[in-house]
Amino acid sequence: MRRRRGREGELPPASAGLIRYFSEETHGPKVSPKAIMIFAVMIIIFEILLRIYNPLST
Amino acid sequence: MEEAPKSKLYVFEPLVRKLPEVSVPKRHVPFKEKFIWSALTLVVYLIMAQIPLYGMAAEAQNWWGSFQYILASRSGTLMQLGIGPIVTAGIIMQLLVGARIINLDLTQSRDRALFTGVQKMLAIFIGVIQAAAYTLGGAFGSPISLQAILLLIAQLTLGVIIVIYLDELVSKYGFGSGISLFIAGGVASAVFWQAFNPLESGAFPGELGGAIPKFFVDGVFYRPWPEPSMVGVLATLAIFFIVIYAENVRVEVPLAYSRFGGIRGRYPIRFFYASVIPVILASVLFANFRLIGRIFGGSFQEFINTYLNSPNGLTQVAADPIRAVVYLVILVGASMGFAWMWINMTNMGPRDVAQQLHRSGMSIPGFRRDIRIMERVLSRYITAVTLLGGAAVGALSAGADFLGALGSGTGILLTVSIVYRLYQEMAREQISEMFPMARRFLGE
Image (cartoon, rainbow over all chains, first blue to last red; front, top):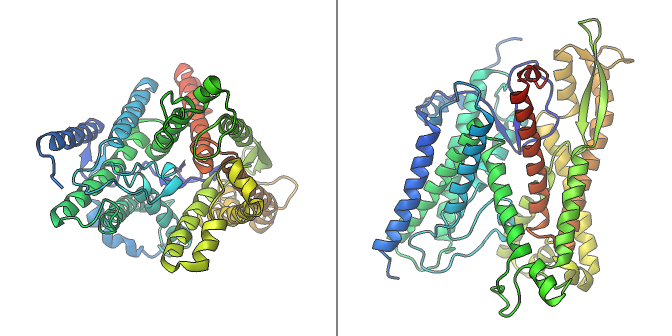
């Protein structure tokens, strides 16, 4: 499902990808992979706590 | 080359520069670390696909049908939208650039960065729209309080943003890409569960859920869909081996460098040149038709639900063989059409390949070094391979559904191809770590 194209003058891709990944930086603020993981895990924990301590009565 | 006019897309550049991105690894990421990042990300994804959304008024409806396998989505959880928004944004961007509606030159670094950034913003935007559509459309029950609506939209959007960054993380620090990892993980766990589930099935109390336990306990080899059976298990295995074989089939066009004393080389055109993308696009199209059918109703809806919807399992095929044949013909035809469209829209067509080969100073021995001649020769190969490959992928997907393969035809097709490529990448990676000298040959 992917295709990576780097430098110019490279051979055309051998097969198609649904999404193109480039190694270019977009010059945005940098986030470390650890921070992403911690963020995701925090959201998971938050969702679980929300369910335990504040069950919606519908 | 003359200075091309700057793309209108550059109005988004200031915004793109504010969008956080996963930092690029400063050095080569070792095999072990890549493995750990990929595994961790997959685990986090699978857990999020188990966390129910907070604030649902009723059990969530599954609007995707068996399409949810391809989108790695799970109804009623944080991963309700799955990778849908990312894939949609990716397809839209590729088509816009391929059709020159957006004027980006992807050989330029700055344009590539902009492409990546805008694609990410588009994915978030589509995520918000889909989240709102689901919530307001009553997928989580209605009536529903305003507070709950906002809560649900916020959670779904947050889910999409997390998936975008997990995908980026894997593509920079792991193997393959996040989306392929999530699809493969979701389908693989569904296949495993349908094959080995030792518990009673939810839908039919008293029936064993898994195909293999059912076979060994009750000696049942076949049972009608949706209950998985041994026929489906065997069909899944057959698809597995066929796809791995077909992944290795290729046509090799001989090449010669014009410099370096005319060193010979080969340009391989894979049998699955357009990969399994044609079937994905065809299923997206069919799913949209079903949605339109829902709006119009009547005989139009009946037609679409009959012929643009795969019969599942041998019982359904036997009940209406004409429907199966018509569906097969439509899917194969659509796949061929999409294969052709996709390679031409994404710069993989004869003209683009000829240009790229020409630019790197290569020609086909025995033919004049003229780009038009090259295009004509390549066109003969590429056209045939693309159409045949597209037809094969469509037929495989339909065949798998007819036999009741576990995890849906398209799902299993996609997963085998993903896992096989992942395996190849890991093998390559390991070789290049064991023999650092080999890195040059592997093009790193």
